[in-house]
Length: 260
Image (cartoon, helix red, strand yellow):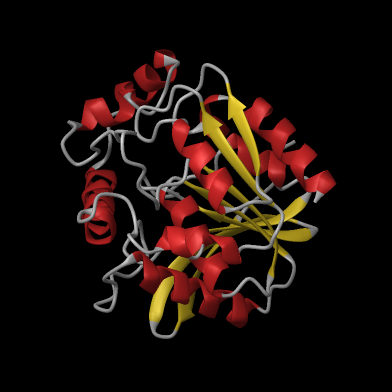
């Protein structure tokens, strides 16, 4: 049985965003990556069995507004602090994937009073000399899809789908916003590493061992910078464990939450 998610337009300080919500229980905020969050994925349905799951589309993505003030990941972090205040959410578990993981970390170093636990999946946000990143801005659309997964059958299914004109427009909009946030420097904040020690929340770092966008070696660096963090590496998996190996991701996440 699947959980029905509602969708609403929510105005936060004059910026309207799309917010999908489903399930019941403790609040869980999912922060999406560069591809947006146009659809509710199976792992979100599973989480909604246990949590009140909130899936917003960031400003500049999907059907959400493109505000003139959006210049950096820091702007998004403050926006989400405003959203948490507006919704009056408390003891929120936050999951962030890729750029969404970077965003979750930026939020947590600023103000984590409304947060209970943090799970970041292959987060960008820092730079480690000698660990090369994949350049998502230079890859073709097909390369971007294929490089997300070890299991190329998933990539084949996605590539076989013909996007509608509206979906094509959203993809271009998402790419433009990613460039606004992460073009220079590429996919990191030069100052974030200095402040990650401020994160005192129970923190889980999840990585696919074959991530072609951000190599799994980044997990060890995050572990040094967030001393209490737990690291889980998923074998034979790419940049999106929650999509490629959802049951393995959910097993590790549930274990983390139980300990937290």
